[in-house]
Length: 405
Ligand code: ZN
Image: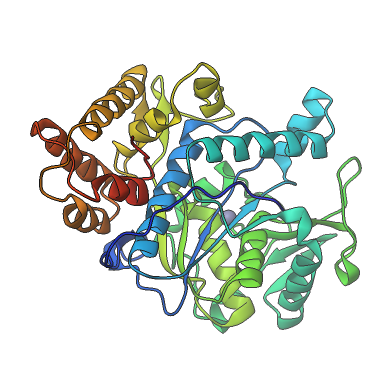
């Protein structure tokens, strides 16, 4: 599928250090050093409602990681999916009387426009689930053949215990959660722990047999149906990158069940770990609650830019928060971002002087993408009264994605 236009990323002199990232399973800072090419998979949107700032914050976090890898001299392959067939999308389509394909296409268009306005580096492969159904069917069939999956009626489920016995993965390897927490999260986040006939209530669906009124695809020996959620990301990652990925990323609400079982599926299919690092971004609240479609408390990038807000101000508002924190979007956050953009622009217009920012920015950002500390470094230079050093504006453009002047 078409992604969006790649922003210019200037090449800087020399190379920055290899970035370190917080790894959820080991609760530690790990060097994100690629084996050959840096590979990044970030879970994409379910296109049933508009892109909000919570999404933008997640994709901006991994945009920073890509910028650091490029600056460190690595080639990067970046893959993102679109879950363009899923229960919430179909429910929203039915409720609004819009065809689910039209709803998805219109929301994907909005997402592309928002990402482009924020100068987010696009994925090299932007893949809709509906584009890879035959590959998913083949993978689910292999899991059935190897004993890592079983049928319940016309549905196919992942056998967590069988997969754990035959692969490097076990339930809880990625999330490190206890069973009670997993059961609660499964019920809350798209699992079906109460479905009768499953070997383990936590086992996730791999292939959902055809239901009346729902879209379905030919499944060969599986019968007609549609893919489960976790298998889509596992298969797309395997189809477009080498396993293990350097980094699997997403919002921290994906730690369980989504990333746990994507890891399980990949291990059962390949015999290898899904990723070297599992990285999770914080969630963005608005008016006291997590920003979410179901709560209806969304701030949309397109609304802000439509009202004439400079997208660089939005970007600086987001980058003022550490990506792993949960934080709240307020009008004050936006005002501060816009104010920062103005003061940086005035600074850029002064005659060239001062100490170069590049070494400090590289070092700061390589420590778990510490964008708030990086902004503080620039602020200090702005407050010094003199202008930017040679190369400072290119450094801001390349590493922070903010083009000044
Ligand atoms: Zn995913």
